[in-house]
Length: 319
Image 1: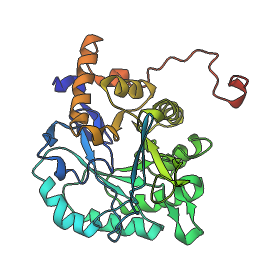
Image 2 (image 1 turned 135 degrees about the vertical axis):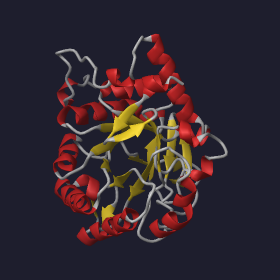
Image 3 (image 1 turned 90 degrees about the vertical axis):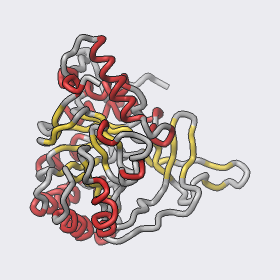
């Protein structure tokens, strides 16, 4: 596949290519081993792991929109201890880097999950999903309060010997303060964006299409917004940015790299085609060859905006 052209590193971790399977869309990784050679992927981000098992939200959990997908799975998972004892051993024979996604409803939850994972072999890094309400702080979302986010990351940094990636939510007015808070508190990288809070309505019942009411919007519909937020985060950070949001082709991946991402994650596309990360890497390789680019890192952060580019409200067209 032209491994030299696609080879890169992320937080000191060698990647065969910069295309990772996103959390929540590839199970724990091992479930896809009979569908795709896992060693051809850049990396796998596991389904979110919690302190105790979680059964998830009521059905229906998925709804296909005009240009994407809504989901409200409710972070269903087997719990961190079952992951370590049952899932992780099956992944160790593979060379693909495994990124463990971690979440909780209090800082203690996150730290307990990290403690269990710290004693396990076969994990390259952690991705902290901060899009959860802190039940000990009145339900304030970690992702919507820079001080709360900074406290979580700083506490996790003390505990973790492995690289820490912080997965940021797009449901904020500006992404820069949150990206900066993560970096200043010890994050080794940030990944963005997580899904957009959304609502689909059934005209017949006048109720929501999703069992839990609201869901998270992902897929091609969010790609232009995700690209903008990746660019904005990359402008204020020295640590790597991992981009995600509607990536379904090699060209999509290249756009995120140009915007400033060092690597990307593929999510919704996996529901349609479990081989999507591998195929997107192949397409990216072909694109680089066509552009006569010897290594994928040459694309990173090369966006050229006009001097008159403006992202403020005042720059929008009059309605």
